[in-house]
Every structure is written in structure tokens, then in C-alpha cells.
Amino acid sequence: MRVLVVDDNPIVLRSLMTLLEQDPQIEICGTAKNGKAAVEQFVRLKPDLVVIDYVMPEMNGMDAARQIHSMAPDTVLLMCTLYPSAGLEQEARQAGISDILFKGELSERLLPSARAFLRAQG
Image (cartoon, rainbow, N blue to C red; front, top):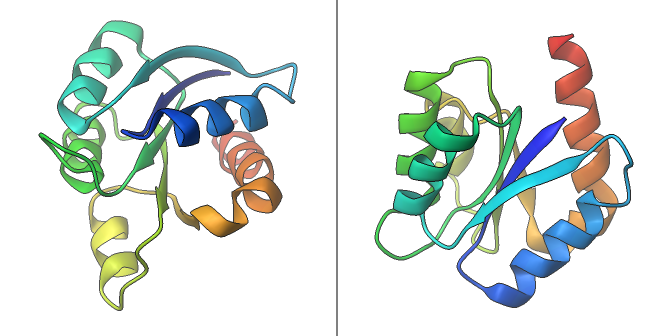
């Protein structure tokens, strides 16, 4: 499975990549530092899965997810955030996001969530 990883913090970006690379079936096909670059990379790379941060400069993850979902509704979108809020889950579902992962729980939830959603897609 091809994965695009998006986060404006280089340390978090590297951590996400390290977690995902533990699965030999995952290929990190690209990275981006903001939502605008994520959409551009998505168009160019056509990944199966996008792991995207919520709060980023230029374009946030929610807006980028909406654009990606409108182009390719079958793409699995996983959003990572430090900022849980009451309306976030509903807004994320409307944007086509499959799951929200809080950054404090990424080491336990990222790979299982990615595998589950991709397996469900067949």
C-alpha cells in the first residue's frame, strides 16, 4: 500500500514515517508539509492512504482532506491531531476522513487503523 504522510513538524513527520515503515507492505510514496502541498502530492502520487495533520500552514488538513476526498472518495484518510474538539469528529466524517488519531496514541493506533481501513476496502 502506498502512503502519503503530511505534517508541518519535521519531527512528527519522521515519527509517522518510522511507525508506518514497520509494516513491510507499506511504501511511503511521498511527504508534504502543508495541506496545499498534500493535495499536489496526492494528484501526482495517487496513494492508497493519506495520513494528514489537522493544523498546518497554508491549508489545514481538513480542507486538504475535503479536496482529496472529492477527487478520490475511495482513498483512506487518517487525520492526526493534538487538538481534540467536540465538533472535530463530525466535521472529519463529512470531509471523508476515515479515522481521527490523537498524536499521543499514534504508536498504538496508527498501524492497526491503517491496516483495518485498507483491508476493509479490499
